[in-house]
Length: 328
Image 1 (spheres, one colour):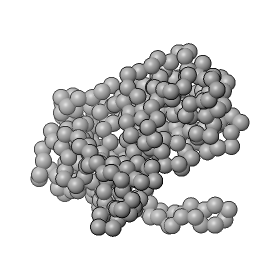
Image 2 (cartoon, one colour):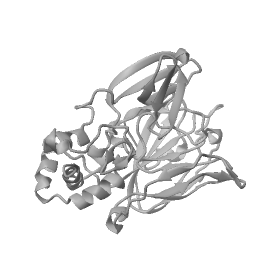
Image 3 (tube, one colour):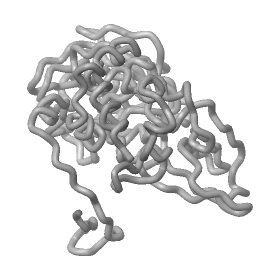
Image 4 (tube, helix red, strand yellow):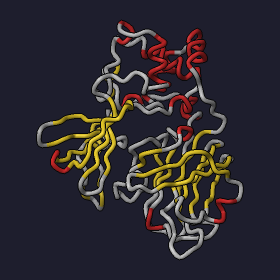
C-alpha cells in the first residue's frame, strides 16, 4: 500500500490517498501501448496522455473546462487518449505536437467537422466512419493512419480560413488488434491462465477501479466474489465483451444535463432529495444539487467500458475469466 498526495510549490494541494500496488509481469507491460515525452512546440499549455482511457464521459481536453466526450466510434473505444489544449487551436504548420510510442499503433486524429482540416491531415490519413461528439455539441470527423514505434509528429490545428475549428484530439490503439468474439474466448478457456488473468484485472484491464475482488479494489461495480456460484463462464465472458447485454440493476450509466451547461456522464453513487453524487469515467466523484439538474437520462448502457472486445485477445479474455471464476 502507498499513501500519497499532490504538492505544488511545496504546498499540499490534495488530500492523502491510499493506493494499492500490484505486481505486473514484464511481459504484461511489454505488450501495452504507452505514450511518452509529449511536447507541444511553442506552447506552454498542458498536454497529457490517458492510457486506454477513451470512453464516453471522459474529459476531451487537458484544460479542465469540463467538456466531455459523449459519442465515439466503437472501433476507438478504449484507445489511449492524448488530451490536447483548446487554446492552441489557432496554431498552424506541419510540426507542432510530438510524442513517442513504444509499439506500432493505429493513430487517430479527430478534427472539427465545422472547419477545414489541417493540410497535413490530408496526407496519409483516411477518414473513418462515425464521429466524436462532445458535451458542448462539437462534432469531430475522425482520420486514421498507421504509426510505427518511435517518434510521432503532428502539425497544428488551423487548416486555413478566418477562424480555426476546435482543437483536434488524438487517440491511439495498438496495431494488429482484432475484434474478439464469444466463441474464440470460450475455446481459449481450455488453456486459460488465471495468474495472467489476475495481472490483467489489476493491470491494463484496470478492472479493480470499479470492482472489488480478493479484498482489493473499489466497490463501484457489482461484487465479483463468489460469482462462480451465481453465473457460468459464458455469462462472464459475454459481460466482459458486451457489457451492455447484462446490466445489473443500479449500475447503468446516467447522463445529467446541468443548468450551467455541463453534461455529466457516469454512475450514480448516492442520491438524496437535495443532492446527487455521480462517479465519472475519469475517476472523479462529483456532487451536484438536484435543483441544478436540467435533464436526467438513465442510459441503457453499462458503466463498464465496451472496449475490451478490441483491446483484449481471446486468450486475455479467457485468462481474465478464469481468474474471476476462482474468486470466493
